[in-house]
Length: 256
Ligand SMILES: Nc1ncnc2c1ncn2[C@@H]1O[C@H](COP(=O)(O)OP(=O)(O)OP(=O)(O)O)[C@@H](O)[C@H]1O
Ligand SMILES: [Mg+2]
Image (cartoon, rainbow, N blue to C red):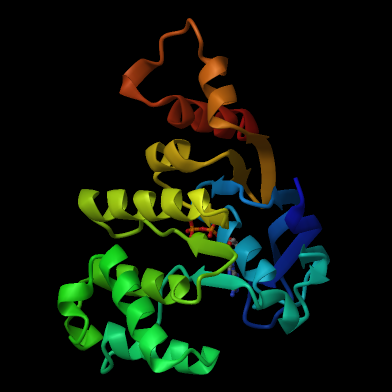
């Protein structure tokens, strides 16, 4: 399979004091690749470096060591971002505009004709379950509705690559299922998807491969099948799913 996203020996330090003297390692020499059409999930505790990794791939964080490429093009070049739909950790949209206004704007920027843009916008709004509130200003949206509006914004350009930073965050069970269905739908269409999440039950349901991160490092890259096989014939205590148990096992190993 063709490699679409590639991170090679990425390290990133942030200044951790006012005088910019003390440094804190956010990423410590991470490498991974995502192939065409793959759903790749990154999981890890708060501060593990998940969002930093995604931000480097999107070219938001430029000062770092190592290389990140999309289609072989360095993420330092804006050309690399041409085919990406991105949902940030906290989507910042215009509160006085509606979800439809945002999508219209996006279609205009992409040069999509009026008829085609109406069809696209209606279809995306239906898929994130915001069609009924398409004209409501976003200031009236709940957190979960805002999250779904952000997702609509990521989907509107029919991206070849989707990068989603905690797409299930703040969503009720129906909203979470909706995101899972969208990931599955785009996966079936051949979209390459990279996302991070804390909801491990969802991650093991949709990912082809999973990277477990802690303290800026990738501890292991695995698959849902391998994780299941790891516990074959064993009893998992506490009603945890295989990935939840494996995740805790890996973190414990890294912190003892
Ligand atoms: N702009 C910044 N300035 C300084 N430190 C930062 C900055 N952004 C992130 N960090 C630090 O880098 C580390 C990794 O942060 P990052 O946001 O990548 O973690 P994360 O895995 O996405 O966590 P979470 O699950 O809470 O979203 C953390 O220690 C964080 O404090
Ligand atoms: Mg994060």
